[in-house]
Length: 320
Image (cartoon, rainbow, N blue to C red; front, side, top):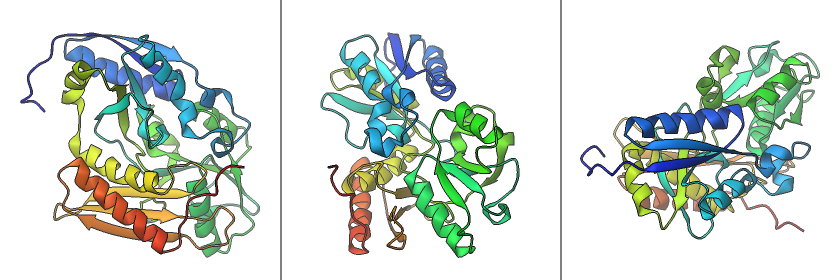
């Protein structure tokens, strides 16, 4: 992107959630844009996803609850860009909005956080593990069943990162599973007891990546953000998000999708689908392709989604 024509300095406002992690992400983008000569302020906002903490996301409207208020601020002109954790961004953005930038990805893996044990195998009898994710629930259940640990309970865990860690420290859980990226960004690596390799806990689509959303009529912003684009990361998450979109794009569906570059330069995409009721076994598929542009990444995602369906995965039933 360095060969692109420099843009005129702009006066920009970033819409952001007010959790510590969201503010870190917005301030990170703010610093990068300021270094490029732009004037940048933050507009902190509380979203419905931040307010509703007594029910799982899959029951109250899904991940869009974390971005809707930010999109309203863009629509009304109170903000110019919104910085999101891509894992929280719905697969289909509303008309008039677009992803202008995907930045270089942080560690996409899941992290095991526990004051009492270093791994699943070391959990005490009748332990409680916390997670907010149906994807993690089915993958943990599968791993625990393989260890013969039907005694372990997996309980819902909501709230921002600090709230989740506080609940763990209060003894409500023996261990929790979080995204490594958030812990690393907030300099909380010391809380991580173990990082799951993708083969053991396949990440969610977009996990660890930051995306910047704009209104589609703001070509000036697309140009200004171009130096922040990390195309290898964008191609990876485009493939992952296409799987999720093709499978229904809902957080009420336990779906993992993770793409990474192979030694010979191809993009390999792995996906897994689980049944929340545990009636069907976890379905896993993968494929790879030579990928240099977004359309090719999306085509790979479509193929993997089709392979999932052939193997028995299916979207969740429509809400009653």
